[in-house]
Image (cartoon, rainbow, N blue to C red; front, top):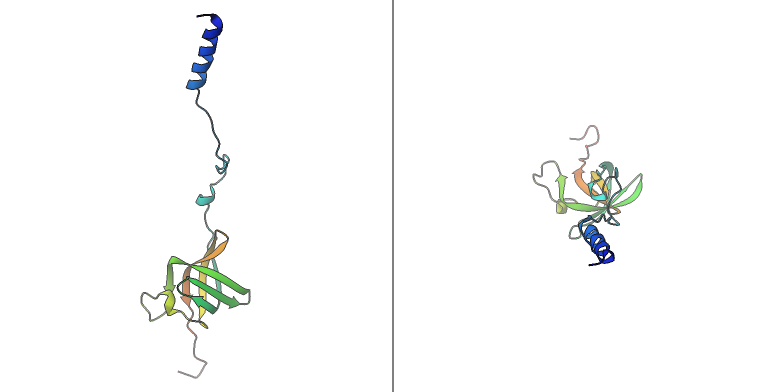
Length: 125
């Protein structure tokens, strides 16, 4: 074999044994948190249910903040006094609620809904 062929094969073998560094377009930069691993900030809001779609798991809330639409998480906790293991269909339009939620995929996702019990006016029992 001539020296030119030997050099060619030496380069081919060297390249074959060298690990190739690849970067995925969606890979985070060093020191950056991957999108799925970002901690979701839980927020709370109070208002009145103005619309509810149990099958689509969506509620619309009215309040001093205007209207907000929430997707209700399948594992969301629903709390209503005197109703053990309450479910979404136990809520109705007109109910005053406190909602804990976070933003996920551009939508507001409710994780906990608590029905606020109205107190009777003073002097009424």
